[in-house]
Length: 467
Ligand code: ARG
Image 1 (cartoon, rainbow, N blue to C red):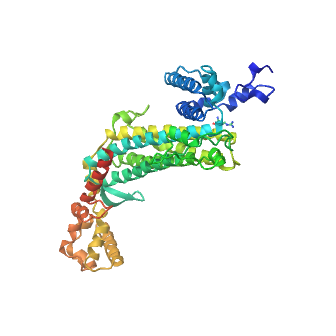
Image 2 (cartoon, rainbow, N blue to C red):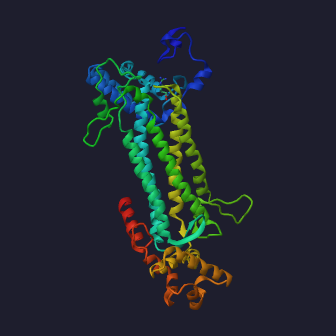
Image 3 (cartoon, rainbow, N blue to C red):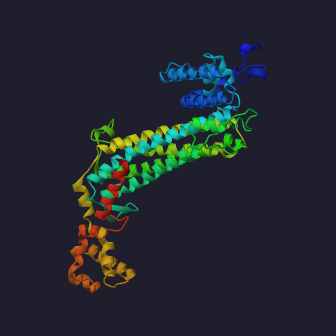
């Protein structure tokens, strides 16, 4: 085969070029082109180091650097022509640089696509985690505003989707904020784990060239708090390891679970049966048939996309499971699931923020539902405990009173003093005070409880972090 027909990057030992089908099957340029900014950054760092150790002349380095700047601009303005036959982002960019300067032929010294793609992805993860943290702050900010506006509005809290005990909108929304706050922290941890430089690992066994790994790591920002370089300690592990992919996909999965559960609460609250929350027209849709419908599709889709984001994590785990060390081409399949999780979760966070920003709680429906006296049955048992009745006995007493009121088709506080004292003499004439919601909340002023002071404290805490 004439030289000009050979695969430009690795065609030397091949007698034929790849079959068209193999090219389509093997390409990753359709999805890894988004790594271009990181790949160029990595190449610049590597070239700088090659110049430093004398493997590139200052002039060659200058030409490479200028070429990289031009390529960055072409890519940013969408002028760059991606070629499927060049397989992936690494070979496309190397060849495009070669068209600008012959010095590009020296760039791949001491480097393999294996450590190159590992580096690109670590740079991607550092950025992606930061972007998701910002998106999380948007969603948390929208929740926090609602929590602030309706901090003390009582609503029933549920277990088994049965009315359990009264809480406030502030307490309930703060529960979701706390969960998203843990996601925010988790993405910092993932970014921290991504912050290690694999360049210099080569294909798996490093290089005989006098590479300066510390130099590259510093140039690419893979440094600790003191500015010291952080290097992967084993070349085989460095090119085979996909832990950060799994951690990232898992953090996305956990965060999407939180958004899905929040969505389910909102969808229930938005139903006519609950009627606690009104969603804005801008994040709901109508029915093609039923003119009266206003559907909470935004939250349903967030819940739906969670299935896909959880699937991405599983996809990745199964892809990696049976692979021997080190790099195997299966690993090219590691990128679509993490890109998809990143894109979809970013969208979900933006939609949740947008939809909640203009939502409002229906005060009357919330207060009405929270005025159900049965929500305070446990508080009545506590009342008896404070008067010396053992809790298990108090539980039975209140159970009997509930049953009695049901028979009389009355509410619990409608029972007469004589009726309740016949069941338990420790129920003194002040027993009905238990059914005052303000009292119920005021008595819950310990950390984690829905007392007004607790809610205010936690709202302020998040406000101070998010402002
Ligand atoms: N496109 C490849 C990937 O994403 C780059 C690494 C290729 N390495 C190789 N030895 N073929 O995995």
